[in-house]
Image 1: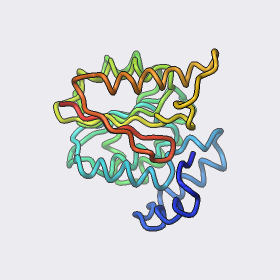
Image 2: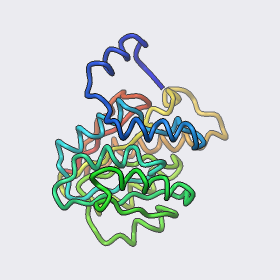
Image 3: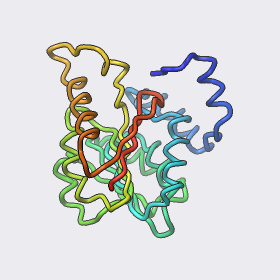
Length: 213
């Protein structure tokens, strides 16, 4: 989803940091072999995730929604020395694909994979986090927030993807459109929760940055 004119969008991408070659390879193989490759963060948003992670230099990251590992590797670029990233995905068929690219990168030993239901896995991770990236099933966004907010360190950041949901957030949702309703509820939750301060960036399909006060 692009909210800017195509030429302006292309200019922004061409004058931003270049996507690493390993991520280019990952993208090509994802499009060749994996269903719904559009779920990739993509080169521009990937560089945004990388930059935010580098600015924060987190010791611990939690990612909800690994897919083929593109965003995982982008976030890992900012990890503090000895830092770790826990990434969760429900699709066990992608685990080997992810690990192949994790091991090709310089962050393989720092990335801990979890396969299964994030709602069940998150409470079992006995760790607090400096940075959380939520990019999973939209109906559970609010549930994920409630699970991770107490695991987020003071000054920690929550990044939430797809918060503009193809522009549907400014339309009246259809009665069976549970995802749009969930995103609307989630955006309201972030706006009103006094434990965080939040800003929405119109990057691709919308990226929210929330900082724990």
